[in-house]
Image (cartoon, rainbow, N blue to C red; front, side):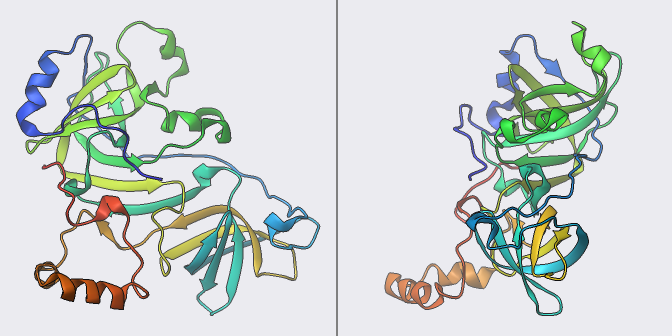
Length: 300
């Protein structure tokens, strides 16, 4: 699933200031961000008979397990991973998509207009944050019917207050909030613009802004990626696990420029390039389209 939504506004520093002068009813944010949190709970799930549960024995999977592994392959809602001791384990994905998370670092060159982003902020009484944004998360859409309670707010565009009592007020939001929307611009001076539902938002980012991809599917995962699994199995078979949480966290950095020698090799003769690609295609899985070198990103 692509992170990109259809872009409606050109991202770039030359149009950044002018775009805001035309907006009415703008929520202007000039500061703070905290760490993002997505607390959710899951109960032990029993394996059910059927082909989709890969022949797991009937009964309740009630033995807790937690281990680190490497991704071998995935098909549907089943992952095959290899534990550190060499044992291959078949893992059924969690019931909630929010409990399966692919996490990776990104650089400003990876950003595109229309990308879904979110951040946490603590707003003062006038709706002004206390410090610049320090962390920006890029994510992919999730079917809201598969989410529970306030978990949906992390995927729904808007400015969501943590204070239930303050939600009915007509004044500016205050206190801890989650801002979710489509990226419009991130200029070299650190100005961030997004549209949070019907609310245009303008804020500033920290010079040490952290960009993080958090995708709740396997679209960006590759064989060999490190996987942490927590879940349950039915003794004595530890090779079939019903996951409570799955976290995939590779060391790739999206938007990173390839080494100079790799760039030079791509400028060679077309025939040589094609031969090289054919020779390596079986060994190198394709990178996601969003991470290719030719994509020009938003400057910071």
